[in-house]
Length: 117
Length: 117
Image 1 (cartoon, chains in turn brown, orange):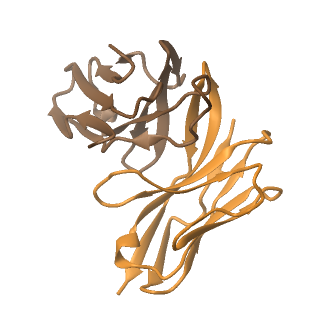
Image 2: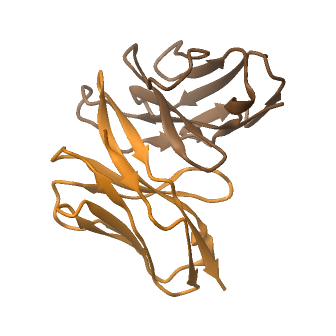
């Protein structure tokens, strides 16, 4: 069974479009994350979401918005896509510190490669 | 803010030999976690090894071990008996608290390891 899954794996779209990437984890974790990996392979945190509290990296444009319908899902919505949004987006999850002790490891999904034309 | 530096963009090793990847970090915290993740061409982020800062003993996982020097803020990864499947990007990461029970990973820029048959 896949622990952290993402759909789609690949996403090709036109500039200006709105798109979503879905993430699901079956690990029972309380905290989920989105990371962006740019063309130089640099990974950077975008959001962390825990018990309905969102921590946002201040460098992330407000065109990006995470949506969590329940604890097992954290979807990423992107409005008005730009060329610079082309990257690989990773979802991750971990156990938070208030639920019986922190799990120090974040488990990653397989990534979604987004290409904006 | 924490920073993580991997000074070797690329390295190569002969199959069956040993290679060491370096990582240094900057922090004012006394208790934290450090990780090495492997990213093969499949793009999946795979945990290789983790180290708790309050533990003086270096972590070991089969052929992978770390040399953790807390005072020097150094966290190098040693791969023994290198195998072709070890070829990948290796990322060093520091876990820091981002608020509301969430932790974020700060990554280095990665080291691309090639294994020569």
